[in-house]
Image (cartoon, rainbow over all chains, first blue to last red; front, side, top):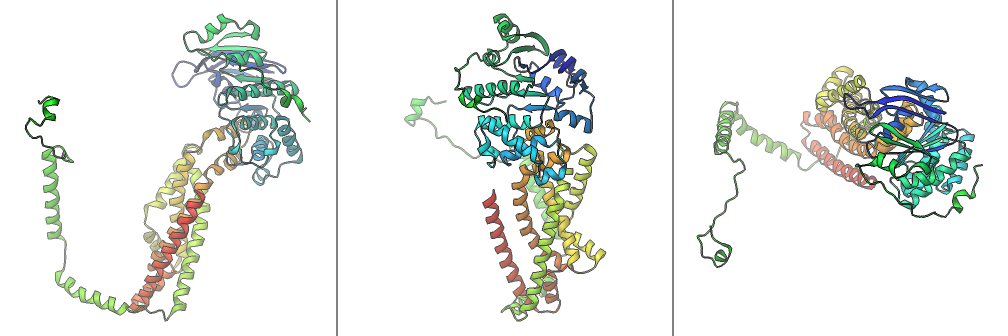
Length: 267
Length: 273
């Protein structure tokens, strides 16, 4: 369970980006966080795995307080928090397999990491996850030779290799075309239930948020102003979150073929 | 001012154009010219040019040149030994320098080194770059004696300074997202370096190594002159013994070798970039 209480993040002396945020995520729920650019969505996710330092407040994951961790304790806590990035952030010059195994870097020692001698169990897990998302045949291909959708699958698998207790996805589909981004959203949704993993997804596309997630959290100017089921996310909520700021992307291109997505179970 | 249709018929005074002066202010413009001329007059007037000595020197230079022709390749073995040593110095110094430049580059990269380490790394690189290899070679010859060891140490230091600086700048420009991804997965500092940083600077590193090998070969001939071993020492001895024909042979071979190594290193760098 991820529990955030009174989270404040302020850069220097500027107005706070997050102003005392409370959020609780349990079980294997898929939560989407919507809000205009600058509302604090990315900062929120990045505070959870401490890529940003929270100014004050508390974040606990399964009872462990994350805010004041340092050094080894912080690294060990991060192992349990997977993250998927907007720009994929793959190790471009390394192979897909090396990228996937990099998700285990928090567990193996430096010698194993440099010589790529990962434990057999890690290799097995890598192959089964890659098969699950349909990229196993790319294992020895360089990561920068893949298409956008394939690259994001590598990113998702890398995060799952950590055996995380929670998955954070920071605009995972914003660099992808509409169809591919729906495939990635479906993938995140089904992986969450298969692995009973809570997933937090920052997303711009409100239509996709409503279609693929079971709870929507709306941020505006660093404050939580909506928290509820997609069915309750009506026009008023939309106006409250985006009103006068920008028009959100309001389209779903139609259901992509689901056969490939759900055919393989997770071995 | 003439209207367009009138000017088309040419019914106006001829218009002139001159390139605007490089320095707009005439006072500054003429002031600089006057200052340069004044300096030249003062410099030539006050520097001790001994014209009689220069007049004597010209036939002496002619004697050296005529003594150098035809170049003598008689003591080819000596020449070969000198070059072999120069190559050994250059290759060893490049390997050592390039390998050592990596930790110093990491230390001197602002984005991945903490402030005190960064300052230390920058300081080391600045110091190793601030002296010409010949000056460093003089110091090392004094410290470890004549011979190739002084040359190797000199060129290693030279390589650390040059490659380290450029590599540090390369590290400062890497795609930071990869580093964040590794941090987010709980990877330690060194694992992050090996996965997210080194692969990104690898092509540049190989290119710099090739360039440095080429440059060290050239420099190894120079530092030999102050006693740091290699072909430079052979050359210096030949001059010392008035073996001008042998010295000329050495110079010709140096030119040939440098041309060749420049060609090869250029070709390799083009291949990998």
